[in-house]
Image 1 (tube, rainbow, N blue to C red):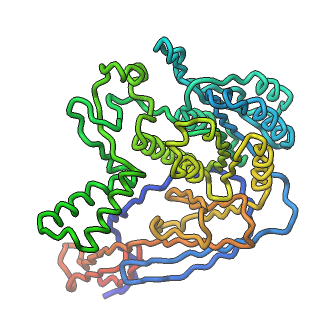
Image 2: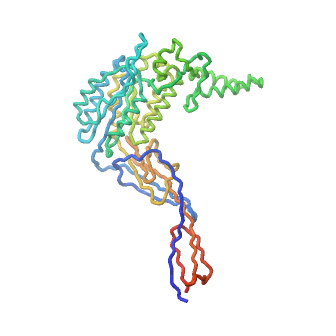
Image 3: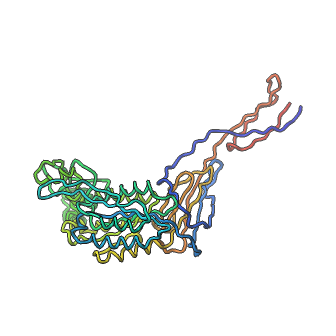
Length: 465
């Protein structure tokens, strides 16, 4: 009987779980080309292997060529800008900022949001929401300045529409190799959102129901549960306990600061003529509406940041000249909105009056010129990223990934190094091979050999004749 070695390979079909990414991976020019990378096996069995990847980048002290930057400046053109006299000062500050950009590497785009315009005397709509491109990305700064001079203002404050407009513009025309900077400037609270068939009011009209939006973190929502707890104390006759008094005090504070409103669907009431004309788009009948709108705006800003754009916000507080703004902003809601929209606290700037606006833009410029970390890594072939394990040792680091690559970005920072990490895993499929030794007639010479092992692993045996 002759003996000859024969090689076989174990085969099987394996299905791996898929994790969707936070966002489409943004293409950017690396700034940190050198960083330390370490791999550590954190779990391993015969059929499973998990590794932790750690990357550490240090601030480079070497000179690097200026990174091209595409600036999109989104400007509030609402009536308050005109009525408070802020518009002309804003134009001058914008031109100063643009003139200090690098013409060789930078481009600037301008957009404005305003409206609708409404005649409260004659109860007529003058014009709809305006989200307009004042200028596409350009490095002809003289021409940009001329367009700023022609900037008009009026109407309400459709910030959400403005963000949608700028995002579409940036996605369509920004350069792949450029830093993408969005600067949002506004002087007051946003008040225009999507159309609705209802409004929230202080008083109930014709059987309107109390309004609760569980998707929005409005502090007053807690009042419903508090009232239930207080009712239970009444039923038990325990209304003199310290806990009962504490609940009563908490409820009174909520009712004062964050009252619950009523969902009114009737626009035929004479006092509701404005809401009917606005088709429910005016979100300032009640503070709950403002929270609903700011929740939508914050989510849109988060979406923009996830797509790789650096978001800076400048808030000019003109609430002192607007009695209604004082009501909406009595707990600092407007300032909190612009802080939450920004990349982080270092990307938010404010001015208590228009004369301080120039200083805010200078501080913003200084932040833009600070260091930017970009760490990127390819997912090892055959492994799957575990998104829940993505970490960084600093706050507010932007993460983008897909199934092939992961990238961290942190801009306008002072720290000397940044460490990030993530886990990957692979499941090792089990396969089997069965070898039968037969003669020319098909008669088995020996018992069949069966081998179970990792798919793709080479298995050798000896033929028997």
